[in-house]
Length: 112
Image (cartoon, rainbow, N blue to C red; front, side, top):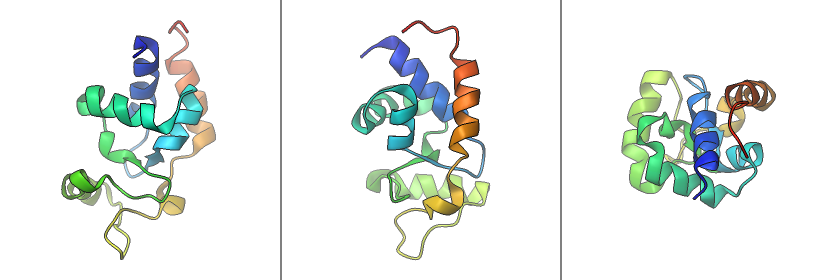
């Protein structure tokens, strides 16, 4: 995996503010890769970032991590949907335009 791509993905996740979420696809569009690659980066390198703020397109958290995700969300005032799978992404999604500007500034020195 390209080190620059890894840094771009991790930087995007770090920029998501407390109480907000972003989808794998949102990050993928921002950094120029696919959602599965974003998931791979988070699985391999994401333990040091706020990975619990990354959800699928429906706002659902990864099944095997839900209890841990929901613990983090409780401290950030993110409410779990009645179906117990995640949050209402329309309500909690980060401002993507603002994130894109912040991400461009944060990664301006990366090659690639």
